[in-house]
Image 1 (tube, rainbow, N blue to C red):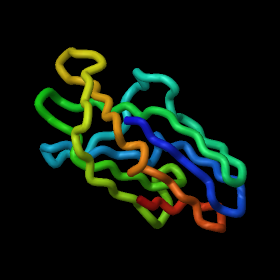
Image 2 (cartoon, rainbow, N blue to C red; image 1 turned 90 degrees about the horizontal axis):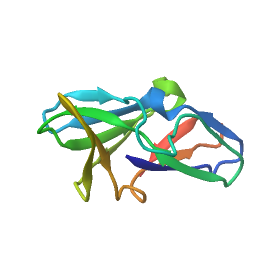
Image 3 (cartoon, rainbow, N blue to C red; image 1 turned 180 degrees about the vertical axis):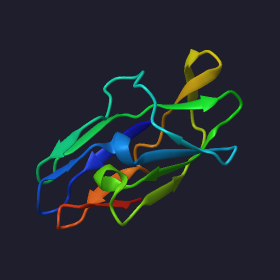
Image 4 (spheres, one colour; image 1 turned 90 degrees about the vertical axis):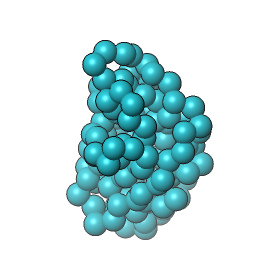
Length: 126
């Protein structure tokens, strides 16, 4: 999944998106990030004022399960606020195939943004 993270706040922003990212499958199950298959991987984010970056998060879903919702909680999943985005299937690619599939959802660039508040703690916004 390609994500863009931006910092419109008044303080630098740091986070590790893999710690607070969850994907809900069409089966209703919640999946955590998997080993990164696509580069650049979005592992650690350090942004100054008005900076942005983008990168991929990978999730491992069983065959026949499509991504339905993306959830992100900043601060390694410990922040009080969680952003939720309903996903559509613009382009799902199987990156590797075994007993489960690693899928990459493209086309979410404008609907998945993390906007930190002025205190520097992340507040997700769609």
